Length: 88
Image (cartoon, rainbow, N blue to C red):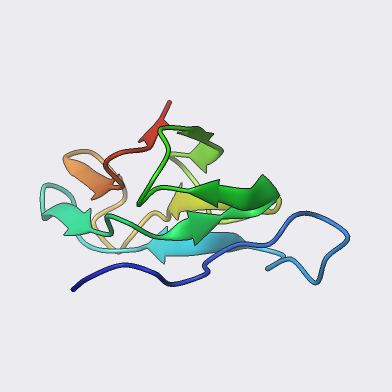
């Protein structure tokens, strides 16, 4: 079964200083499947819908998810699939 991984802790609890999941691939590569995992503030995407912190231009600032600019110069067409959770 996929999932069950702890990717980001709450700030002050030994949190990853960048992003729990940082995706850096060429533009229009697609979505990384990361369903059913755990993130900051006890967000368990396997059991409870929650909104994750997200940065679509960098992997910094203790975010749950981030997209980093690749050699192609953009993050367009890439995403991280974290169903049941969402991100903006």
